[in-house]
Length: 203
Image (cartoon, rainbow, N blue to C red):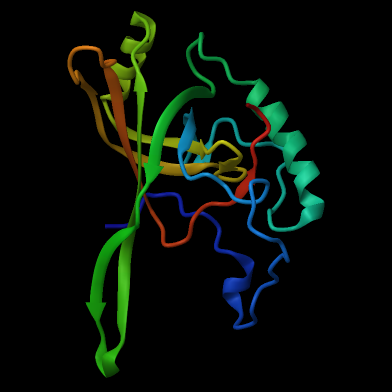
């Protein structure tokens, strides 16, 4: 059966054996990204693997000259989010993480091993604060495929078209007294390469 997942564009340097360019920076508060996922943005699929609302004007990452271009495009795109009407981009503040990819290892002749279908899983949770959010989360329990972007405190992942994923788990948890009721999502996409990264332009 053919894969229906969106696969992020392979890094340009994967096509050659030449080592890529690394920036000369020291580890510090201004350069190290914290690992917690803090935001997810959902979009409907327009056709195939194309989102209804791509980041118009986005260019490839990895070059310092592209930072300002992408930041301007992301700022305009994020301003179009509307959580109060049906359709369009939807933004949820969350607490989450992305774990190590898991796939199937196959042994080949001459001692070679390859891994197929490396699945990446993003797990997030968010409090249930009103009935409108509760009903919106219930609809996500229908699962299926969506496009999404995820962000940490400092960076947005997904590039121009986001990531096509399957909602594999969507459930409410009631941890008990003095603990907020949570909505939990597990989002899965298949790729061994992570999506493009840009500076996050909102706080």
